[in-house]
Image 1 (tube, rainbow, N blue to C red):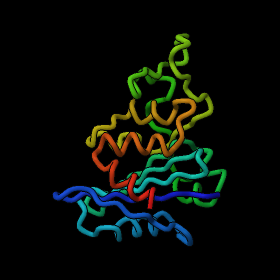
Image 2 (image 1 turned 180 degrees about the vertical axis):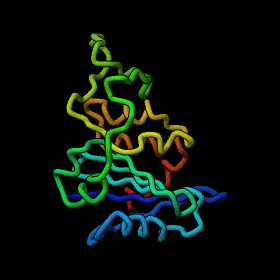
Image 3 (image 1 turned 135 degrees about the horizontal axis):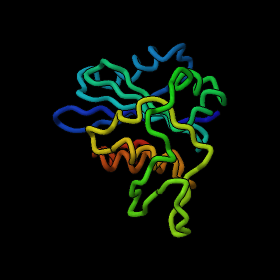
Length: 179
């Protein structure tokens, strides 16, 4: 299973980005340590892990503490050792994907009851887990994050790019991806 792991860290001076190697990580605490190592003094550190163009996991540390994790689909835990490591112990968020009515890129992703053919369908198999509220204070609401992850045809890289643009580190992550 191939993956791309990008860490972004925010200080008062702005965001920095670095690729993170998760190979050989024994547990979630070791992954958190690797995120901390990107910038020990960061106010906020985020780790985005895309796996096989199917799954996305997001980790957050505030001032190096209080680990919070979100996964786009619980199936990630069943598909790989990395998925089990990142999202294996997470529970479903309080809000269900079927409850979402949120504009995504100017288009509303609606509930399962909506029958408007102009709107992209939500992926019926998506089963997000963890703390879907972990980016709310950065401008990505629970609804928006879940809608992005549920939007059919939306790749993890697309979700990550949109999230990073909104929170202000899109250029740093794009440069990292192109390196």
